[in-house]
Amino acid sequence: MPAVFNDIVRALEGRTPAVLHDAEGHRACVLVPLVLCGGEAHLLLTKRTDRVEHHKGQISFPGGMVDDGDASARHTALRELEEEVGIPATAVRIAGQLDDIHIPSGFVVTPVVGLIEHLPEPRVNPDEVAEVLLIPFAKFFDPALRRTEWRNLKGMRRQVYLYDVWREPVWGATAHIIKQFTDLLARNTG
Image (cartoon, rainbow, N blue to C red; front, top):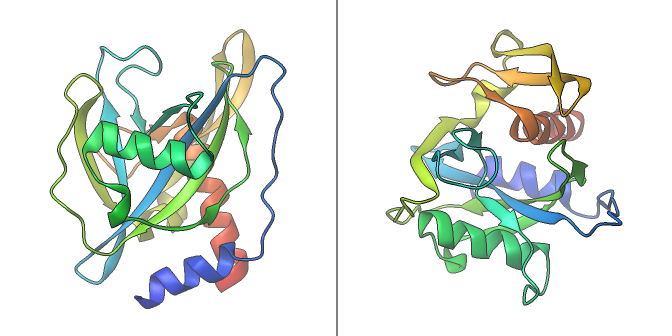
């Protein structure tokens, strides 16, 4: 396994992620996929279409609501990866989970970190995904590319993270998860 992936596995192993409970049962999972490209880790993100029910047009991780038949957060995250971008579970090594987050749209989201050494050709679901992005993971550690803003979301004033790593900023729950992940890695590998 590449050294960068070893660092990620070491940072996540033996760690107990914080689990949030939601009385209304609105649970979702996302896969935080790191892909090896040219010896470097890249974060795989998607730009959602305007036809999806939630978070239209936003940049996000592959993911979605937990189905009754899903055995675990990992199962949901891998199922959604395959449904949205056509990458099979067999291409992914699960490294661990990050802390659950509660998002303004009413979901508790469990982020699952997956490592992909050899990326199969994505087969995008055109109803859900407008574009697949591969962004060098190192960009998310650059403080010059990260900022915060105050926004009114669902009637509440919230501070949100934004990453200026693409032609549109990565923000919202996706940026929150990335910040959690990069902070964890910086503490454990720096």
